[in-house]
Length: 281
Image 1 (cartoon, rainbow, N blue to C red):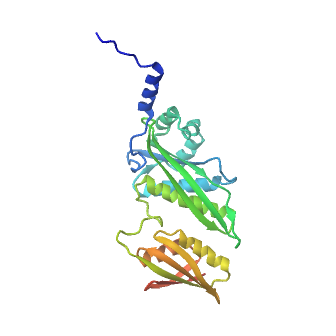
Image 2 (cartoon, rainbow, N blue to C red; image 1 turned 90 degrees about the horizontal axis):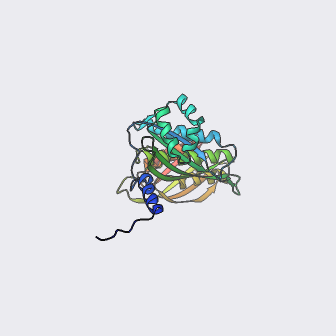
Image 3 (spheres, rainbow, N blue to C red; image 1 turned 135 degrees about the vertical axis):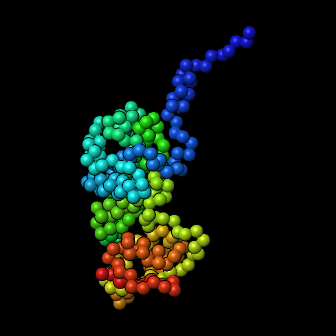
């Protein structure tokens, strides 16, 4: 009889753990299942900015709002607040399997979504505006198995008149992207991809009532982060009128709508023939 060489116990244990806790292949590519209630918590990583707790709560609320719009069942605000304060939730944020299972039994949550935000200190440019970035690593766990069913990473970059404003806008942009990933791209926002087959073209944006170059620079930064815009540069400013040239792929009306949504102090007056006319309020 041929003797069988036994496998070392340590190797057997490692293989067992890998089978139990390995994520399903391609988990980061699919949308979050619409089976059961979802809870979302966005918390701070090591590069966090002091005092950003309120912004994190707003970002959480925005993600859950979009999930609700896309047909998901989400935890009600009262239960969400109770869940957030629980020891199980704190442990679940670090991937503790037993804690994730307890969230399901204690709060009726089917999926626990954890976003860990890194919020570096915003930087001020020569025009007095602040630029902030927000990076969010996302993991969603099934509370039935303790295994994660989704993972991804999102980011946002925005400009504001203050460090706090820039940070909140960047975090909200990352939250929008996070929701889009969780729903499989179903979240309707400015981050949506341009229509297939849309041709690239040069667009001239002319803005009246511009009182300083810093105002024009703020609009320029907004343009650079709009969906479909590959490049944007300021080409003129005099007599209260600024001009920005953009390379854009998509429908011109969509560009104008996205710009008005992001730059709330801007009023679009006309759109057509490769040109958008606007004015600051």
